[in-house]
Amino acid sequence: MLWVGGGQGAGKTTLSWHLSRAHDLPLHRIDLWTYDHQARMPSSPAGRSSRCRPSPDWPAIAAAIESALAPALETAPRLAPGGELSRQRRHENEAADRQGRLWMRAAGLPVMPEFPFGCECGASGCRVTWAATPADYAARTASGRRLIAHDIP
Image 1 (tube, helix red, strand yellow):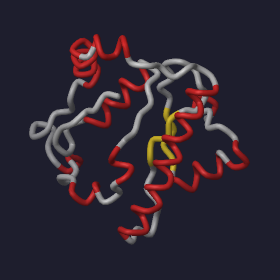
Image 2: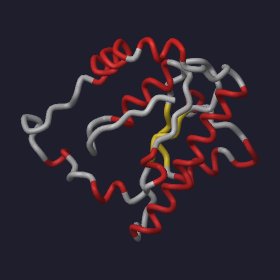
Image 3: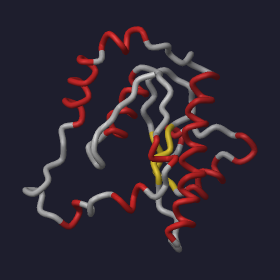
Image 4: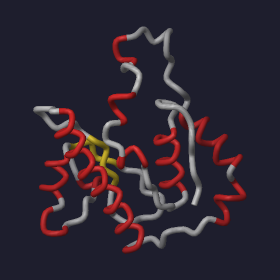
């Protein structure tokens, strides 16, 4: 297991997600287990000038991290494409669904926010996501259907 640490808003989740998809690794986002994390985050840069907070070059950062972690990534056990990988992505999405609902309830939000749910196709390296509310995710995956995000228009 690889642990990624750092300050709030540093990009831990973004980089961990990239590594999990690029190398078929399980992803356990701690933020999904602490739904009040959002309240501790600095204010959104949306209202700030782009000169104040430029957008990071995520592909370059991910490449540098992959290079630094190459020995660990080469020996990390991979999830088998197909059922095993699909089940793990479902587990990750169910955690996002559950914790999103808890956060919404605890924060008293009248409308559920959207989350990026990962594709559950089970294909090696699949990075497709679907931005949807937990309610939309639950409806899309009713009766045990997998979320195949690249099939959504």
